[in-house]
Image (cartoon, rainbow, N blue to C red; front, side, top):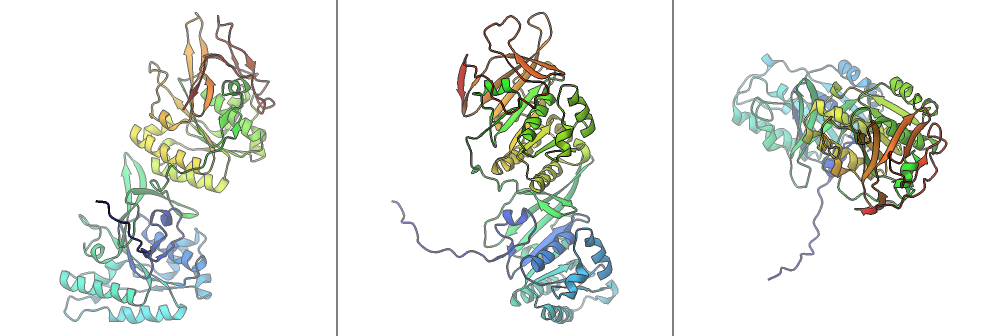
Length: 509
């Protein structure tokens, strides 16, 4: 027997946006408004910075003044620590948008007795709130208030009083706490009283440090429950919302040139779909980076900005090497149409790379992104983790309608239709390069293994890499395939269409 659907309107929990990139997305709007959030973690994980961003963004972006009560550092030291992020605490204080109150609590001043209470803190906090009409409060860190107390009954009672006081005054509060040995916090009580609990983690795996965030609980609302990598940069904290990216991105029928007219001809004479993901795989020396350079050069020639992430060579080395095959990439770098970002795969963990790439993309807003090669990332983690990271990156790029190309180094002896990172299923187009000895001499071969949504040629073509650029022709002994050769340097002919090859075409979906 079917049950009639209820028409009851479900009220949504009021939330205060944090202004921290990515966090508001995974929390569904921010922290619970008028309630207490506990932020816990070990030393160096970013608790104080997180709390300060919550207050500063609240005051500057959302018109909600705040009070920062610190029990460990001086106001001068705190202001100096966050000045590098562009936070001018003295100016915000002068404009009565923020109050920083540093309270020194010595251990010998706290004695365990039935008369212990927080009335003095309430009075001091109340005065600061009234002074700026604060809507947000940070207490950093709560352990300082209860140092030396071992009576858990008294401790829980006073914690409950503190949290109730904050809620009764309708303050959106963020309380920081230190991690315990086997509990989220040192006392193991705060996480049960708070309405929202966020855990920060700074871990080191195989000498690579990464930071991750997890929403342990959030009463009254749906929230993401996975671990989310976050990055601390000169712009502040940015959280990568991994599972918040759904398969809902828009698609287009617009096409972009590959930079190799003959390859365009193999793709219905039009090239890749805009916003699609492209994989170029092959063994060492088969020309993967040259194909990527042709694509970058073609995008720049169209006036589209391109970000090139290199994990193997420096920008200078790439520019020099590509000159030898006819690509003058320097002119595009001078015009800021082509930007290189080179880094060692071991410079940070996968989460750090993902967060860093995402931040750079959002800042530059390119139309084309190249990652060369993805194989090197495996040196920092396993295949599963790399595939998971690339899945999130590709989803992010597709949401922004950014056309992406990834190169993959296949190991000698492996099947050509194999990728070390097992990411081929994520790609819309897969181009395979390989060495061939079948004709008695070594040649490079190129073929399109798949290209979703279009009829494409699957013919094997000979790829010639020379000072004239990249040329595709028939394999030795094959006189039936049409040839369509790119002009010198590959740039002048970048926007032209090759002649469609109609032999053995099929639709790839």
